[in-house]
Length: 92
Image 1 (cartoon, rainbow, N blue to C red):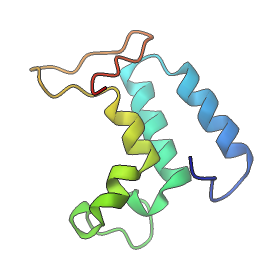
Image 2 (cartoon, rainbow, N blue to C red):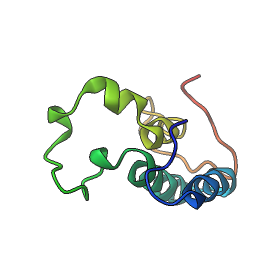
Image 3 (cartoon, rainbow, N blue to C red):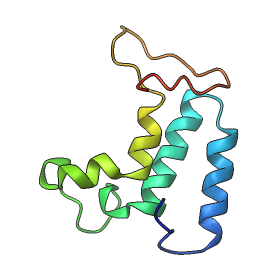
Image 4 (cartoon, helix red, strand yellow):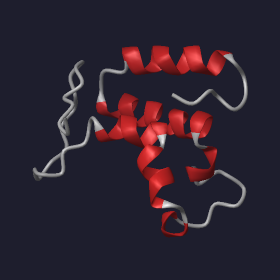
């Protein structure tokens, strides 16, 4: 895992958020926070952000927040399901 760009405590906060997220909106919030901490250039709030099409695919694939979110997304069904307290890890 990459070290946080800003405050050293962000790493501890991020790990706690990962551990205690239990529902879909929490997974989304954690994913977004991880992008802001570890890969801010992939965030729409980053100063020069234009679109994902302009970014390197390897950078997107390795982004901590996006890798985290992928664990909780299943695209093979008509609906998204809440994790109900467990990580479904559907892409392992």
